[in-house]
Image 1: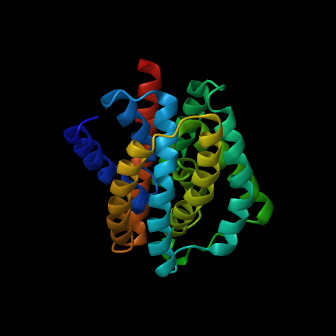
Image 2: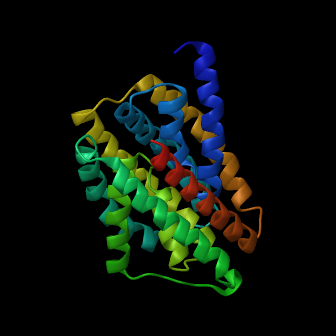
Amino acid sequence: MDWSTFALLGGLSVFVGALIGGIGIGGVFLVPILTYIFDVEVHMAIAAAMFSYLFSGLIGTSIYARKRSINWNMALWLFAGAMPAAFMGALLASAVPARGLEFLIAALIVFAGGNALLTKVDEANQVRLLGPVQLVVIGVVTGIGSALSGTGGPLVLVPVLVWLKVPTLTAVGLSQAVQLPIASLATIGNFIYGTVDIIIGGVIAAALMIGSAVGAQLAHAVSQAILRRVVAWVLVGVGIFMIGRILLA
């Protein structure tokens, strides 16, 4: 890649970072950007994306934590399930065909987004906490799905939490935090069994950090009702995008 190519990659990654920081969803676009626009081999693209989520996760988590939007009790149980699952997912990534998994994730995303649009919820008075067993199971699903698809955690976690009627800002806050263990363990696995391009990953990471900071600030500037509807519409759109990509592949 030359400097102009890196500049384009950085610009697109800032946009992806803003989506990740603002609504938790955005990483789904990163691997297609790398493979279709920049002709990066898919397993290298997934490895570079997972590496970059370490840094977007740090920025997003710090901002959401500072604004007290992360339920750490829930987060720790999610970590317990997600960490070993992400490592296993990274080891399986080169051997497991991703199309079936992507279609399942896409269907979940469309369902969760549609359900959120059709269900009226009083976000101001909504307090929905999940038990440890539920959170560990959700963490396992999130860790495996994210490591196999290179989506970093939020793409799987946010739809599940929105579907279970966890307050939207809490769901997005948890999605920021869960990037850290998933990206860390998946990256270790990728370094051992795969290829991590530090240069591409570094460019993406720097851009994601900028975008994530902007997105996180915007998420706290709008009402919970607006944030929920934005998340719901983006879920539906992303799910349709994923299904279309699978069918056209």
